[in-house]
Length: 95
Image (cartoon, rainbow, N blue to C red):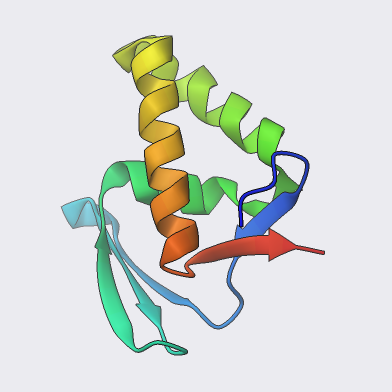
Protein backbone atom coordinates (compact mmCIF):
# COMPACT_ATOMS: atom_id res chain seq x y z
CA UNK A 1 0.00 0.00 0.00
CA UNK A 2 1.34 3.42 -0.98
CA UNK A 3 2.06 5.85 1.83
CA UNK A 4 3.21 9.31 0.81
CA UNK A 5 4.76 9.63 4.27
CA UNK A 6 6.60 6.32 4.15
CA UNK A 7 10.11 5.39 3.08
CA UNK A 8 10.74 2.87 0.32
CA UNK A 9 13.47 0.44 -0.67
CA UNK A 10 13.98 -2.48 -3.03
CA UNK A 11 12.43 -5.59 -1.56
CA UNK A 12 15.38 -7.38 0.11
CA UNK A 13 15.18 -10.71 -1.70
CA UNK A 14 14.53 -9.22 -5.16
CA UNK A 15 17.49 -9.78 -7.44
CA UNK A 16 18.36 -7.10 -10.00
CA UNK A 17 20.45 -7.96 -13.01
CA UNK A 18 21.69 -4.87 -14.81
CA UNK A 19 22.85 -4.87 -18.41
CA UNK A 20 23.95 -1.26 -18.62
CA UNK A 21 25.50 -1.62 -22.08
CA UNK A 22 22.09 -2.70 -23.36
CA UNK A 23 20.14 -0.22 -21.23
CA UNK A 24 18.22 -3.08 -19.60
CA UNK A 25 17.55 -4.25 -16.08
CA UNK A 26 15.74 -7.40 -15.01
CA UNK A 27 14.17 -8.02 -11.62
CA UNK A 28 13.57 -11.51 -10.22
CA UNK A 29 10.96 -11.81 -7.47
CA UNK A 30 11.51 -15.15 -5.70
CA UNK A 31 8.45 -14.93 -3.39
CA UNK A 32 6.17 -14.99 -6.43
CA UNK A 33 8.64 -16.35 -9.00
CA UNK A 34 8.73 -13.98 -11.94
CA UNK A 35 11.28 -12.13 -14.00
CA UNK A 36 10.40 -8.57 -14.96
CA UNK A 37 12.05 -6.59 -17.74
CA UNK A 38 12.23 -3.10 -16.25
CA UNK A 39 12.02 -0.15 -18.60
CA UNK A 40 14.28 2.79 -17.87
CA UNK A 41 11.56 4.56 -15.86
CA UNK A 42 11.07 1.58 -13.54
CA UNK A 43 14.81 0.96 -13.29
CA UNK A 44 15.45 4.56 -12.26
CA UNK A 45 12.68 4.45 -9.65
CA UNK A 46 14.09 1.24 -8.14
CA UNK A 47 17.52 2.88 -7.94
CA UNK A 48 15.99 5.86 -6.11
CA UNK A 49 14.25 3.57 -3.60
CA UNK A 50 17.10 3.22 -1.14
CA UNK A 51 15.19 3.86 2.07
CA UNK A 52 14.46 7.53 1.47
CA UNK A 53 10.98 9.06 1.92
CA UNK A 54 8.43 8.93 -0.89
CA UNK A 55 8.45 12.71 -1.34
CA UNK A 56 12.23 12.70 -1.80
CA UNK A 57 12.07 9.84 -4.32
CA UNK A 58 9.42 11.71 -6.30
CA UNK A 59 11.32 15.02 -6.12
CA UNK A 60 14.58 13.40 -7.25
CA UNK A 61 12.79 11.68 -10.14
CA UNK A 62 11.12 14.92 -11.24
CA UNK A 63 14.39 16.83 -10.97
CA UNK A 64 15.96 14.57 -13.60
CA UNK A 65 13.06 13.48 -15.80
CA UNK A 66 10.94 16.64 -15.54
CA UNK A 67 13.56 18.55 -17.53
CA UNK A 68 13.21 16.14 -20.45
CA UNK A 69 9.57 15.06 -20.37
CA UNK A 70 7.93 18.04 -18.68
CA UNK A 71 6.92 18.08 -15.04
CA UNK A 72 3.32 16.84 -15.46
CA UNK A 73 4.27 14.00 -17.80
CA UNK A 74 7.17 13.02 -15.52
CA UNK A 75 4.89 12.98 -12.48
CA UNK A 76 2.39 10.74 -14.28
CA UNK A 77 5.20 8.38 -15.37
CA UNK A 78 6.58 8.29 -11.85
CA UNK A 79 3.27 7.45 -10.18
CA UNK A 80 2.43 4.78 -12.74
CA UNK A 81 5.87 3.18 -12.47
CA UNK A 82 6.01 3.41 -8.68
CA UNK A 83 2.58 1.76 -8.32
CA UNK A 84 3.53 -1.05 -10.72
CA UNK A 85 6.75 -1.73 -8.79
CA UNK A 86 4.81 -1.90 -5.52
CA UNK A 87 2.20 -4.24 -7.02
CA UNK A 88 4.93 -6.56 -8.29
CA UNK A 89 6.67 -6.49 -4.89
CA UNK A 90 9.91 -5.16 -6.42
CA UNK A 91 9.90 -2.26 -3.95
CA UNK A 92 8.28 -2.02 -0.54
CA UNK A 93 7.82 0.30 2.40
CA UNK A 94 10.93 0.18 4.57
CA UNK A 95 11.40 0.59 8.28
